[in-house]
Length: 423
Image (cartoon, rainbow, N blue to C red):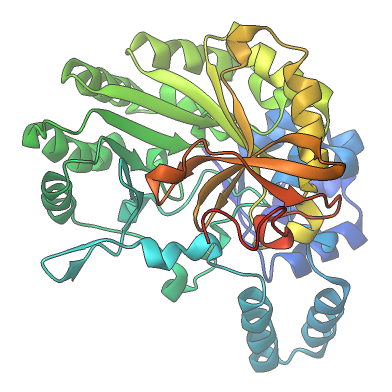
């Protein structure tokens, strides 16, 4: 299929927009897109969205910005300035609103590593075993998720971007840190790059033959948003060959696939792409956040995990939507998220119970809600750390006061202690 992408300037040319979407909803999309990035492609538009019921369609909500993603006062401010035509004031308002939405959650800037006084601006090293790498040419996606916690990277706010062009410094850093076993290519989406470009990053790492580096991961939404990348694109075969070369070099290749809803698993295109990737020796693990209006039901998650296992993929994480961007719209309270997780996982066999969560990727690490219980007559939320900046804290249970409204770790108060174990 020929690739066609649409942005906020061109989306009204989409035939389905012209046929189904009301003028008021089009206006709301345009106003919300002043703050939040918007991009979609013809595969998502043609294959995944039920346009006759677009307002309630989970994939429409996943990719199209809409009014309620903005706080009411922000929406009214932008609408008035847009109607007034005051570009300077509108630009100022957009910036102020973006900066009020916590554009760098979990202290991302504090995780930038350095070696010999040189900062690796395109990397993050939060956990001793794992380093994240942001290739410069991979700082976009085939389509933008409306909830994405990396939304500032797609808005032109250069001071909020993570990207690294040169790989030599990364190799030097990994060699100097023998605790690093995992390298994650992330973005944006690293698989939006041509295979030729991707090879320019991967091949030097393979040639470096770093003994303690064991696992290479690609964090990607490409399977859900453009499966032709692995079947019909002009360099699809070369991409699959690159995967094979990584595996043949002795690395565990983890393809970290992002699926938000079972609808993304049901096309013939994605099923064929999954088969091709698995033939290379890569292992596909799946992950996604739980999101209000998109997948906040046990039935959706149980169905998704079952279908992923049937396709030979491994369910890996259920995340909590990060405290950034439109969290007020997409966020699910922690207690409710745990209840959905518990009900969903009780519906699947042990093969799907590889999934972990619901997990918050917070400043101290990945904090999972283990359950709700009662201790000495007091109802509490049980928590544990699946990963931590301080590895000694991993898998130690701790407790927070029961709070049905809390949506993030910062909303919770410690129970039976003056502070949490990571404070």
